[in-house]
Length: 105
Image 1 (cartoon, rainbow, N blue to C red):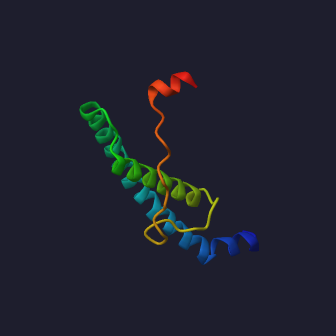
Image 2: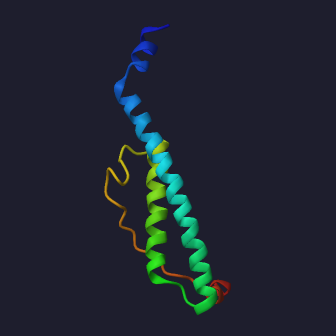
Image 3: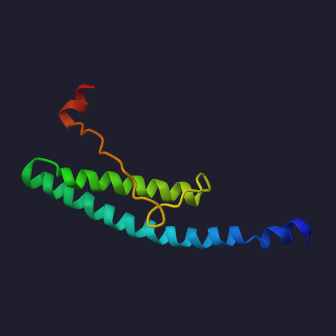
């Protein structure tokens, strides 16, 4: 076994990041589950009222941004630790494009 390989295998920072990756993978699964609930509830709300729920828009945008932060961390594109070790993402929902407007674009 080469000295470089031994050095890399003993690097504590890599092992600690691996533990964080396990934690964030678990949290991403929970966030996916909650996001699925938001999607279903938003759909039902739209069927019943004809409007989208503004609070669910914000929650959905925040969850989407959070999952994106986790993916960035897991793929080594970022060293930023997502929530709960970092701040919850502050993302405003994008404006809703109505289906009738989308057909005109």
